[in-house]
Length: 448
Image (cartoon, rainbow, N blue to C red; front, side, top):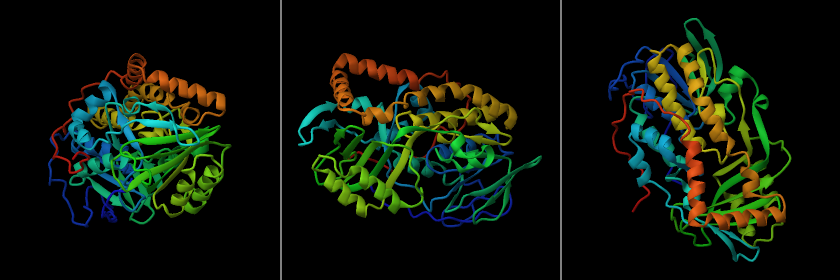
């Protein structure tokens, strides 16, 4: 859903360690909000990516005294995006220790039922919201803004730029940027998503690590011509499902989308017009009457998401002074509890750095040992996401719908909830004693 644009501009960092700049360019000496801890005060850390994992690790590291710079290739925070949910004790513990558990509930989507429909738009089956929304569900963009607000006074954010080269030396990592002057950092964290540029720089092309799962997903803004109010309608034909949803109660705006089976496509990820052409081609010919509205809205949509449903499979998260976090290391396009995993991973990485007194060799090894099994377990449940949303045959569509009906029962719904919570909670979370739980109240709210 479209949110008010954040007026965030990029400032080029100075060519030295330890300076920080706000959005307007005023220098902040890292004493405006003194972190409660100083265990990592000797570290200058560069984080690539300002979605969720990046600001999350910046939150923890800055509150342990580290000087943190976050570089983001987009010109501003990315608003909107898909809804993400959190579930189980581990997610709740980390969010509580961050001091944002109550904030997330104030901005939650309150999504209602999602209805699978026939070609004539009559209902086939309802999917209760609590099965998909976890303990709390929010928009990714709202979460990103919340984390940014919690860190912007103690963390340097540089928008509209990206890492060009990385070169490790005995003293640190020499970094050049697309626009800003070169700098040297003690550590670099790649938190730049499924298609991580940082990962490519240190470990090679993504073709070595990204496993395509046979489906694509697209989402875009559209008018709320169905008058949906925190509900969704989905229509499936073999190998593709079209959907229209409203997650925030906005009477004017909705979200359109499609999941479709396909061979691996070749296209320019920066060319939105080409992506729109592919999406429209996959929508056309479907029998649902609202597909025409989806195609019409797509033409003028200015907020389009399109990507393969894929997973990152990699045998290491760190090389030298560079470490991968979140989707860059264990990504899954959808269905893998990835946002919760990213926040848990950020907490563990910061904790292990504190426990190792900033020794990256010890900390990164401990982080990998601590988080890999957990992250891969969460990722594993996303492996059938494409076929779940867009079954390949009519028979499998009917089978999926029967499963939906069964999940509507109280007993099976409870079993499904416990199963997903078990995966999300399959980690004995350490209490690292990190500073930073106390923070100012957030300004983002979804509640009346």
